[in-house]
Amino acid sequence: MTKVLMKGNEALAEGALLAGCRAFFGYPITPSSEIAEYMARKMPKMGRTFLQAESELAAINMVYGAAATGNRVMTASSGPGISLKQEGISFLAEAELPSLIVNISRGGPGLGGIQPAQSDYFQATRGGGHGDYHIIVLAPSGVQEMMDFAMQAFDLADQYRIPVMIMAEGTLGQMMEPIIVREPVTDLPPKPWATTGCKGRKPNIVNTLHLSPEFLEERNLHLQRKYKLIKQQEAKAETFMIDDADLVVVAFGLMSRIARRSVMDARQKGIKVGLIRPVTLWPFPEKVFQEAAEHVSKFLSVEISMGQMVEDIRLAVNGRVPVEFYGRIGLTPNPEEITRQIVNVAQKEGWV
Amino acid sequence: MKIVAQRPESLTDAPFHYCPGCTHGIIHRLIAECLDEMNLREQAIGICPVGCAVLAYDYFNCDMLEAAHGRAPAIATGIKRMLPDRLVFTYQGDGDLASIGMAEIVHASGRGENLTVIFVNNAIYGMTGGQMAPTTLLGQVTTTSPYGRTAEQAGYPLKMAELLAQNQGSAYICRTAVNNPANVMRTKKAIKKAFQTQMQAQGFSMVEILSACPTNWGLSPLEALEWLENNMIPYYPLGEFKVSKEG
Image (spheres, each protein chain N blue to C red):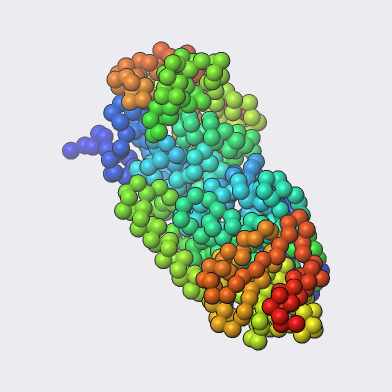
């Protein structure tokens, strides 16, 4: 096992290559560009396809075409570029084309800034484009997971025939950590639905148009059945010291590692506090919150946004436990700030 | 008994939904005949546009995809890069290709993507009910140019064949029409040449086909063909605009 020091964006790109990604289509945008640059260096030498598209719209549609041939393919961008890709993501979702979309996220709205942020949570978890659909959204918390989740994302995409998004704060794309490089994947599932030329079989069609109202509804019901199954099987969260907790801090991505430090600091001060880290943002790991709500007095969602995931926590606990929020945008909350928030809650509740 | 005419194998037996006098059906048949004669059906992958031909995936008897509005050349690029030995073609109308899909078509040509575009130019948006297209002629009445298109208000119709012929990546660019039997035969030849260009990996190929839309032009099928000849051909001259040297 080799341990190497790698930048998050490059670890993600390498993970995708290890998972058998045959093509990358992208457009430059900070802070995601290193993924495209890494692919531009590596893929031609591996006999794979790197193509810089003329736009984000073109890139996501190249993904659509290449995914339809049954190959593992991806694109990567950041907030403003992901907005442009939404048309294509809606089409990918309905055509059920497995694909990987990466959002190395920065703060908006508009051009916003290039600082790390989590404010594309709504866009990622609510579908984002038009129509009733979801995509699986994975939120890595470190450079190792940038690699590992890229590999898992392709497996999930193939298993459920669904676009999968990895959403990571810009920090995760830019920072370096030592990681173990995984073994390449060799066995990929067959895709008999792919449009590869109809030699020896009936023609395959990849489309999203359903003019019959009944069939359109049936297509939507089919997607909903698939989403229900994914919700049952793939919702994932990590928990830390929640068994005896009065207060549970909730954070995802790199933010969850910062919050974990605050949880340990607050424990030193005698506050019974724990942490839930949603690993999948969609499906949201509701069950873990419902179980925690049995004994927890309060949740505190900490986000690099003005409050987005907090809505999913409130939906999950359905009014049984109050859910508070602390967040910033442009700046990432630091451990001392979060500890202060925890202490404030504890003092208000009379726990300390 | 000797068979003198039959449906090409590259067309399914699904009945076309096109209006009386619409020339999409002729163009579909020409493509299918070329696929049959060149023995390419089993390696062909086609991409339909948004527009009247959106349902063409039901008509062509080969692997087919349907694209978002204007994106067919990007989808074709993704397919062709994965499967370089297949025949990949898009079928696009004027709104799809020359308006909302302008970036995708120009860059597919610029990159010299080795694929074929069948561009059906009938100077109007058909499926949405007769609105002004980027190729609508000056003075032409549509539902969104009800007093006739004026240069002051809507600028000038775009000449896509001429525009794309300037790109070095374009290997074969031709404009034809399907208003009479001679032009229909020339169109078939051009489609075949475009497919050959692709199979010889020479680069981007496009056949722009002037086509009739009697329903939205408000003309009878016969009048529509006359209108095409008297109004479209003078503005959109027929002929080859780019032929690769190797061809």
